[in-house]
Each structure stands twice: as C-alpha cells, then as structure tokens.
Image (cartoon, rainbow, N blue to C red; front, side, top):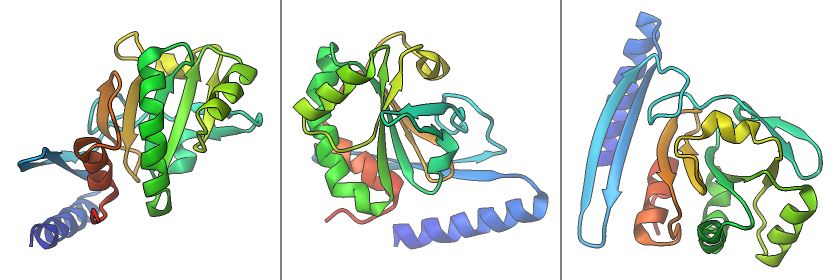
Amino acid sequence: MKKTLLLIISTLLFLVSACSGTQTVLITDTSITENSTTTTTTTLSNPTEGLEVGNIAPDVTLLALDGSKHKLSDFRGQVVFLNFWASWCGPCRAEMPSMQKAYEKLKDEGFIILAVDVGEDKETVEDFMQEFALTFPAFLDEDRETYKAFNKTNGIPQTYIIDRNGIVRFYLSGSTDWSTISGMGKLIEILGIEND
C-alpha cells in the first residue's frame, strides 16, 4: 500500500514538474531499526549541485586503477556508493568487508561501489584490494582533488549514496557495518527493491 501511494505521488509530481518546466525530486527516507520503521518524504524542486542530501552530486572525474577516466555522471542509472578511504585508516579497513558483502548482495540490482583512495599510489591500492578480496571498483585520488570536491569533515572514511538520478540521498562521516539491518536497509530503500 505504501509503495503504491508513493508511486502515485511520484507520478503526479513528475507530471506537474514536466508541465511547469522544473525538475522535482522526491526523497523518501526510511530509518530502519530492529523494532521500528520511520518514513519521511521530502519534495525538492530544481536541485542544485552540492554535498547535502537533495543536491546533485558534483560531477567529478575519477581515475580507475587501469588508468581509465570516468565522470561520476557516467554511473547515472545506478545507485552509487561513493566512499573515500585510505589503506592506513583503521575505520576504513574495518568497514571494507561489510561494503563487499553489500556489493555482492546488491550489484545485480543496479548498485555500484566507487571506492576512492585518498592520496595513495596505485600499487598500495591494488595490494589493499587484493588483501581484503574486494571486487568493487577502486579509484585513485593521489592529488586529493576528488576528495576536496566532496570533503565535509576533513576525515575519512566518508560515504555518499547517490541515487540513479545523481542526487545525494545519504551521507556518512565515519565507518559503519553496511551488512547490518540499518546499513543494508538504507541501501535497499534507495535502490527501491524488496528486502528478502
């Protein structure tokens, strides 16, 4: 029932915005705990580029380990888990296994992790990815320019979850266990899939 109502509201907002020439974004935030679920819906018109929830994420260029370059906008159509980390960072090391679990569970649902290493070289990043058996894409930011474009707290890890339209839907400074009910629940909610 709730999903049907949200679909109807989303469709109506789309039709109104299409007629008025503005872009409308419907953000539904669901907080999931062991005992309860709380849903909040926010409507934004003409989102601007920025780092806050509801903003369009900055369209930075990412340098993959193989040397190829990708714009963040190249990943539109997927839910992007943009994580800034480094191999020397204890909290980063702690959350990586849970990120891998989330990636394995959700990658076929239009979910991708873009793990951006801040300030380290290719060999260090490759060794780290191999040590932890991480299969999601890793990117280099040796000059820290991408990190500077997204930095809110001068620390790592920092994670942004960006929806299929390029809108920031969630931000976390610090690490978490993404395989828990609250971590995985947030990802499933933004993906718009049923949790099985």
